[in-house]
Image 1: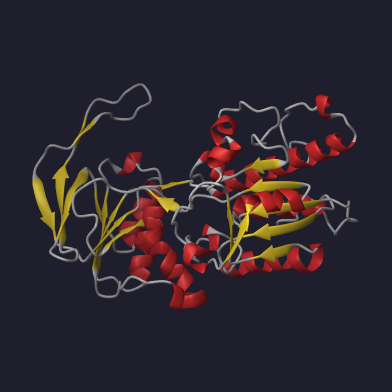
Image 2: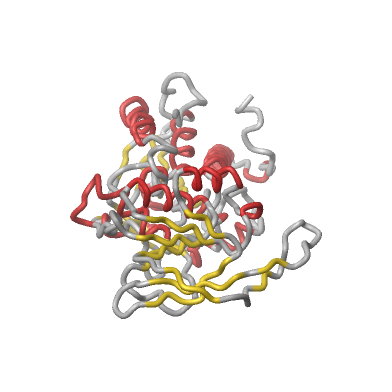
Length: 365
């Protein structure tokens, strides 16, 4: 893993300074690009290690943490990148409580970063999980995907700050069929769960993670249940089980997806100790309204990836919502190049010459 793949050695400094908020895949990709352009880069992240969900969410067998750590050390030692960890950047809106906030003990303002730098790039990712709207989700033993994965991965860095679920010897039900659900299942089995049930309301052929991942889950011992949907989670004070309904598919539409889905079949009970609702994440940057991110998403901006505030850019999942790592990396690279172009043309009073072109095509040959 090499975030400075666009240059062989550190270039001379160009005299410009940029702050990047978020040290996940898009933030680190942008950092490497700008470092290769000669910028002095400072990176803010609320977590004690750079890497975002690559370190604190995705299991190590997918992305070895040592690879990320070595790449980050190269940014620090060879390119002079200043990582300011355990630091959360705040806007004018109320802060959201998200996974990882327990590690932040420094708080800085977005306005201060804008004043102290030539430009700011926001790459805060998606750290808030979607909730399942059924009875019983408030019981002890019910977790979202991030509430489950984050403590398991973060405990190796500072176990005192997180509450790690008791998994060993437990029966775990995991709802969802994206990569978060797959990672929860693998982590549950690695932590010694007695049984793991994978619950999905459609078939494996429609699973966002793909049929191969489902096949691998079954080979590793997970019990995959298709065409079933959760109705309620029951228990007195903590989870004792989950009630499920059988589903049936209607005729496929033009895209090949069977919709709507009808889940009015037989009800049955599954006795479990833990329920994890891994049904996706959402981006909650505390400066979304300030920066007009909706306009950026719709492309209603003059500059690629620039927000409604001059010199403030946005990239990655904070802009698009949850995506794959490759998409986040590419978004970070595009935003970094757009930022560099904007500053260069601005310094020459040539902003009217900017054209929204395909970014990085020539750089990645």
